[in-house]
Length: 251
Image (tube, rainbow, N blue to C red; front, top):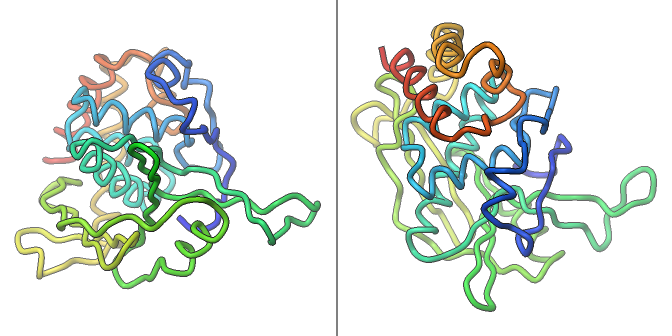
């Protein structure tokens, strides 16, 4: 995403640890705007990287936790799959990393805040990627990240394909330049793409049933966890709930 349009709980990557994600009570990380909070996004990314959640469950979780905005979910599905790939290469990652402008100010005089989509580091080198839907350039935003931090543009990776989203719809991710990633949708052939609005409509038709299926596993006491408020603090229960929801979305 370019400049942040919401204020989640951005986390400094130098202070990251497993307990921040799994035991930090992310249920209380509320965001009424319809965005998944930064805390919950990184929590889900961690559960994916550690294979507690599979690829389909991550897509389903992003869709349910961004119930008011599937387009934000699409962006986050791409972020988490890039982070997963980087983790497999040995890099530690953080999503929505906060960067403060050296020159731009807010109306109250503070430094303008950006949130870099993906930051990954190993040893002394830290890199950044900007994620956009296909047909949209992220170069301007990427340049702001680099100019206002010690980050350098990330390397170009091989395409990431066959990311299940909903039903027959899949996501693919191409890397169009250093630090630049574009995601797109298709069914069978990555060269025969479908519009994101079509995928969003497919989700909305099944959203209520998927939410109820997940709530039936987690219990009414934590039903808010899957309607946009937070990630359940029981990863095993969350995985079961998202599997139930995924079955509905795949039907």
